[in-house]
Image (cartoon, rainbow, N blue to C red):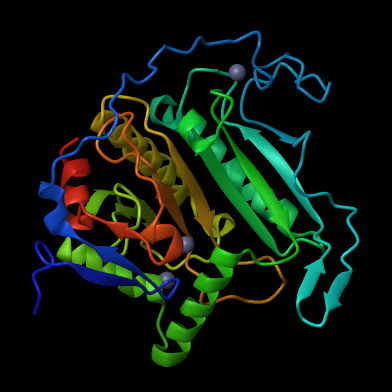
Length: 338
Ligand SMILES: [Zn+2]
Ligand SMILES: [Zn+2]
Ligand SMILES: [Zn+2]
């Protein structure tokens, strides 16, 4: 048996059926990459040039109300439009395309330009959780909407052009690729074992604890065994819940709590605001029962060894399979001590 602290090996992601190559022996090699000072300029509470701050004009010409809590609006330059005809084009199975109706929204977490999740009050974060649940239910109730993707891009490194803490909700009529893979895996697990894949995984990690980063009464945050990004984490409720609107009162408070503590830990890791893409995976809104689905979030942060040195998925990773040097166990240990 190989030693997964020393020997090259690959790990299976049971949610997607994909493998990641792990090369722990390479963490000893010298690093000659670029190191530069991260921009750490403090943000103001209100920025007159921010298109998300209360009372300001947006790029599309609309003006934000003087909102005092979370604020939701339809994206002015939406990637999807509700009136798109759902027609299909197919030439010999080679040129295949389909119209994709959908709705894209933006959720400002708070009127404060400078308050990230890590710095928000628990009661205000709870309002964000309730907004996510309400949007999931409202958008999902529409005939043409079969999946609601809630996600946050944070930091210029992740292509986020606006520092005002906000997330996006893209909802559309077909299951996106990643969700489709995870649905198939959860369904297969349930059919083969009459149990839930993520319930089983959470129970195993709660016992082993080596990849656990944060936990509270109803949630766990951990570096998954098959993580691709150096400090990737997965956040999951202990109870089997298919979607965010199924969370009870205590679970919603606990979600706000674990997100605050996890993002604060990320910020402490390299003593700088930590960039990431995060988002929920949950049951489709296609009107079917989905007992196989277990709600969870993924955090995909790009940083590797400092506030400016990021991991790139290039070369072998782009053409063959993702690869990492730092083991998920070592990454969890570093996050726990941050
Ligand atoms: Zn702002
Ligand atoms: Zn479950
Ligand atoms: Zn997932």
